[in-house]
Image 1 (tube, protein in one colour):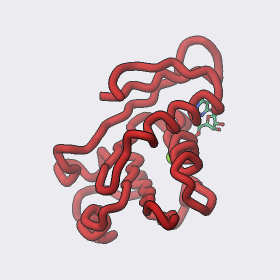
Image 2: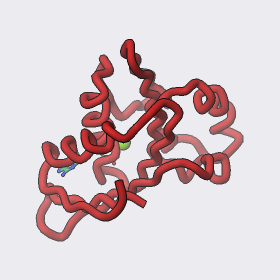
Image 3: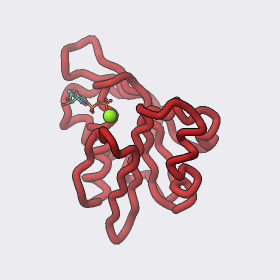
Image 4: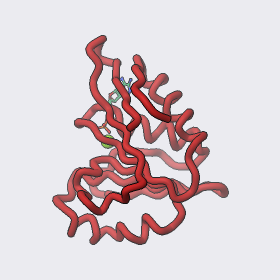
Length: 140
Ligand SMILES: Nc1ncnc2c1ncn2[C@@H]1O[C@H](COP(=O)(O)OP(=O)(O)O)[C@@H](O)[C@H]1O
Ligand SMILES: [Mg+2]
């Protein structure tokens, strides 16, 4: 997927995530950028539902990485918000997670700096100007 999409509800964000899910394959890395509340975790929930992986996708307070495994796919969901730089990111086992053939979704990829592989997809979330539930989602 490429381009910008305007979504007006959580349901539309989930639908957008479902369209992306169809394109994803093992080993893909998806970086989700945007401020707090922009919709990164909500999008990941839609992705998890579309991929059919079990477990609730949450914004982890203590847990930086959550794994959701189905017979078909492993979804690794990272939220790097609380980490302060590349050393912290390496310490969570970054390289192992990236080499497992999982679909890896990363919130706050900025924290990982140059550790983010060149082939990663980047999706940017912004609040829209058309009301509280509107978001602009840009696939780079
Ligand atoms: N169109 C939308 N897409 C995503 N979230 C939305 C939308 N409209 C309202 N929201 C709300 O905005 C909040 C987004 O939070 P969250 O997904 O946790 O953001 P982030 O992970 O980027 O910090 C949730 O409370 C969600 O219900
Ligand atoms: Mg989040």
